[in-house]
Image 1: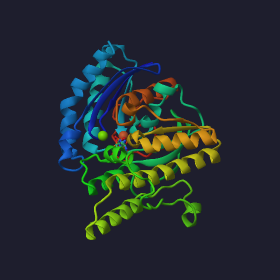
Image 2: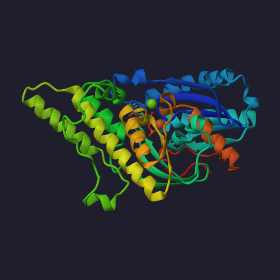
Image 3: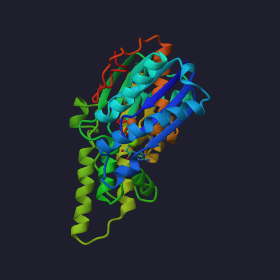
Length: 345
Ligand code: ATP
Ligand code: MG
Ligand code: FE
């Protein structure tokens, strides 16, 4: 099927056209620069940017694909999770388009889109596979029986997401928002064993209760305390070493638990997605562990890791193929859409 995908959960207004698992166009307009000086996304500013960008971005995505709206078989839009005001703009716009052109509309889960997008590079989504979602707002392990129909949450972070942890430490080190990519770059120059960063919920006492859950707030606190102590002693901060140690700790715990989950669930594939999967330390460690364990690790290319319309269009394509009913005409947005819900009824 030909599917138009629309994304507006946070600070990216994006649209893309996918035809039978092939990406025909992919347009992203970000309001990130407008938020940088506030140190985080300001919902009101992001919503206004979506309202301004919606029509130009969708028009461009169709034009790049050499199509009119009449040519598409279905429209998919992120219905959640995300910022309510931002979701409202994208979903209202998509409803107007679908109603006007008489097309089926799917209000889909943005986070599931982050893993569905891997199909554009690696081919059809395997059944009964494990998936690792790592983004600004989420860090979870999923057991995906069928990406269009059945997803179970196997583990999740009990506090901060991996991207959030990086962004908080980055702020402490004086990097602009979002700080994740800055930490990545500095980590490549530092010593990953320079300071001991705890790995939350690894083994031992918490290991049994939460075999696949994560905790990153302690990681952030440990790094913050170490930096503050150095500052109090008037010592310089070895920024590269701090970044390398943090990145090594986070990448190791994510990779280890993902591989353990693959073993337990008998999956020889690990699908990875979300903005934090752009992280080079995590990408390297997952591939390293995957090679040892014989697990095929599928991580999207960098531009498909962060928010985009292709991920939404691809998931929409899966839903059409599976014969799943489109969302009702009056479906609502859900800013806290649970990860085991793939599409709005
Ligand atoms: P969600 O998908 O959970 O709703 P989101 O859409 O806001 O959250 P994404 O756009 O998927 O998040 O990811 C953004 C996050 O990814 C930010 O926290 C950012 O710092 C982080 N990130 C992006 N690139 C890198 C990188 N190379 N290294 C580390 N973190 C990165
Ligand atoms: Mg973003
Ligand atoms: Fe996202």
